[in-house]
Structures are given as C-alpha cells and as structure tokens.
Length: 265
Figure 1 (cartoon, rainbow, N blue to C red):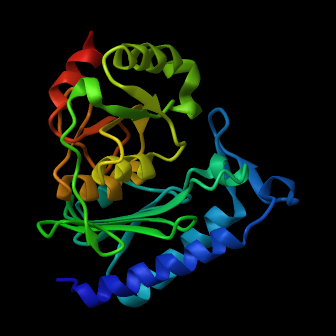
Figure 2 (cartoon, rainbow, N blue to C red):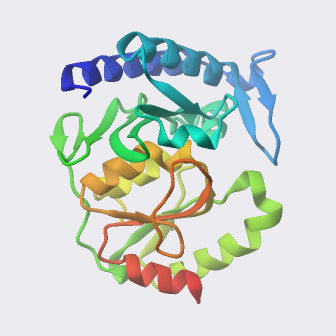
Figure 3 (cartoon, rainbow, N blue to C red):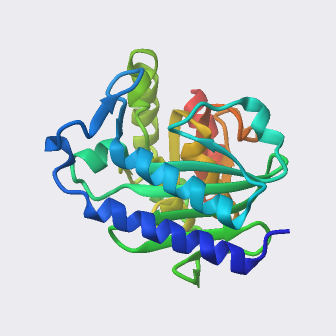
C-alpha cells in the first residue's frame, strides 16, 4: 500500500516539472518545439514530452511496479485493471501553454484495479497544488477544500469545447452551453479541463462539462472533486471509466440532476 511519504515524493517531482513549465518562454516562436497531432488544433510541445518522461522515470524510482497511461504515449485499455496505474497529462492546457496564457496544469491520477486512489493537479503559475486520497479529503496547498452550496441560478459553470473534435461536437456543445447559460449565473472557459474540475472542487465554480474528455484529462481531477464533496459522471449520469474517453460532467452535487436534465433537453 503506497504511503503518504511516497506521495510526498511524487508531489515534489511534479513541482520540479512545474519549474520546467515556468522556464519555457515564447514556445510558439521556438523552432521545432511544437508538433501537430491528429484532430483539429491538437498540439504537443517538446515540454509535454520532456515532462511526461521525467514523471514516468521519477515515479518508477518511487514505485517500481507502476504502470502508466499517459497522453503522449501509446496506451492500452487493458491497463485500466492494473494494481497500480498512474494516469498522466504532462501539460493539460497545451494550447494555453503555447500562447503563454498561464493556465496549464500537470495532472497525475493514481488508480488501483480501476478504482480512484490518489489525485494531484498542479498549477505552477499560481503554485497551487490540489491533492486528494480516497477517503481522506481534498486539499489545496495543504488546506482542506470543499465544493460550493450554490443553487443552479447562482451557479458559475465552466465548460470545454472539445476543440480537437469540433466537426463532430461544436453544434452540440454550444447548444448545451446556451441552455445552461439561460439557467445559471454565467459561463466560464479556462482551456484546462483538469484545472476547471479543481475549480469546482474548491468552490470557485459550481460545475464543469465537456462533450468528450480523455482519461488523462479527468483522472486526477475526479478524485479531488469527489473528496471535496462533488459529483462526476458522464452526461447520462453513469460512472466514468479510467480506460476510455467519455462525456464529462462534474458539479457541487446539488445541481447535478438539474444539469443532466438541461443537457438532455
């Protein structure tokens, strides 16, 4: 059973990777720093790869038995039932990172045989470290956090646009956004799903939705959100799987049913 001391080493490693993010300047102008992946406006930078490799090699020194599902590598759904699986997004919000928007995070979720166990999301620009262990609460820089108690009309709701799949999902996501907008206080979009989920966890916002998210986008955030008293499901209210992309909805729990009804209108 991993202990708290071992996860302190992981968070220290993630902080080191955050320093690499902060060291990057004018990535858009850096020759050879950006590659285009499949889909629309789907980018990867050399920093994504450097950080992912550093995380994997560093975690293996702490947990030699660990297996990995990570954005910038080939993955297998069979990994989902591994005894100790680390699900990594080295830079969630890569487009933000390229544009120097300063809203990108490192996300590491830990699963044991498909069950959420530990989540870490780090925003180096604000030095915000969100952590949670199953059954032990959620924290921001060591201070306990919890979701809001706002109702739907009071809610600030964030959303993602599934930009890589816009030809398929654009009409749907903006139709849903309009329906939600007409019932809540306002909408927001940060460009980082993991950070948006953590914003719900600490009560800054009240819900987040996206038409399609990959496991590395939500693996850590869902643990933090659940431990903060929130709820995460797909658009049908079903439990998320850590092995496959899914529609995604999280909230402060109080407005979850209302959001699902609004999405299905």
